Image (cartoon, helix red, strand yellow):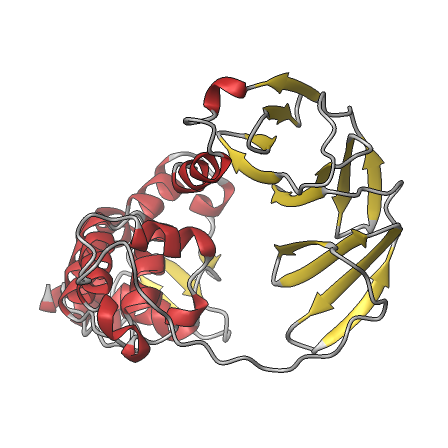
Length: 334
């Protein structure tokens, strides 16, 4: 391996040049790149246009990362650090270098701590690194009682938090009761005061739809601490619910039996098929479950299929008439 690296450094019989994002160049041997990476093997043997060229532009990572990866292909050695490990994982995934990917995963799993466990857990999810996912998740469970010391714990998504607290291995003295000490902060007031609006979070923003006898739509951006008015709902919805699903927000239920979809990106509303049941004087609950939207109260549950734009009765889902149990179950089994 050392001999190959010397030949590369001296540009002896190199037959391809890799051009990096910073416009620097690395002379290489195709046969070495092919032996180390299925990505290059496919490129040079499949008849692709790039395979016949002498200069190949690479931009899947920053220049330093690509240089580190190429050096690894020639020497078999690589120095992993907390600063470069994530980039090396992403680069090795792109180049289909399974052995390097496994080596990176072992390094990351061995270095899981309170400062990185959540980031590493998410990284494992992105690249399907099963060992890292399990190690980081187990660490979060074990350190749960010390959650204040876990970096970015307050940034866990709702789904991630549900996954943690619903796990049987959660390290708490009483799995039924635990407390978070939260600090409240005053934010900018809504532009239009409303009574009982339908609130939902979507794409790092908060939306407030309608309220008593109003159709207003208000959007809050926490990063800017700023509210702005958006397009009004097509109609009122008293005693309804709002739920985010895919790239849309749905306002459903109410005395009026409504089903509206809202596209936040384009600020557009669409009127859809009405639910089968009207909800009077009590707010129903709505959640996403198995690709559908469930809507109901203690007496009735119905299901909306966004693809078919169709509502169906699902009263059989009510566990002993307790809608709260049904909603919790649905939230934990997405």
